[in-house]
Length: 196
Image (cartoon, rainbow, N blue to C red; front, side, top):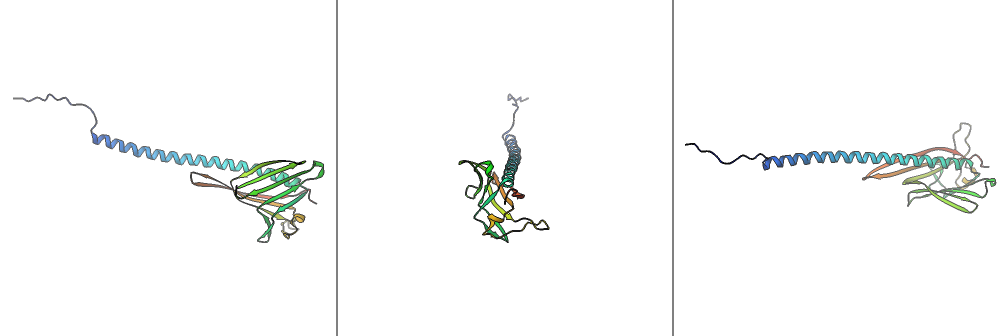
């Protein structure tokens, strides 16, 4: 006697096969997501470097132009640091009378981490944030270079009278997903051309 089965075999996956497939898919997706996030952070960091570079170029260009055409300087809270006269607060610049009554002030606000440029012409003031995210800021003041063209510092008390060149040092900082991005600005020394 022959026994025949009336059951038909249905095509499909078993529960074990489905679980293995889901686990493998989860591993692949996790690694792809991690890779995507690393690339995303890198792209954001490159964007911040570009933004910091553009901001620092603009800031140095304005600072250079303003310092070179100034006829007078007032240093805010000068101090002696390692034999050099420095200020972490800023400077006020005045200009020859033929321009009108004009003054420009560069002021560092450590709590807001900003370098602000305020221009006053005939009593009207316009303020702009020149650099933002400034972690550290310092201006160093020098006298006329000697025979070897090495700039030398002078006494703190009379810094407004003897300053002939200024060096700006600043560090810009940005944070992307808990990764800090920094850009240091170490400028050349700028000569005050119209200073008496």
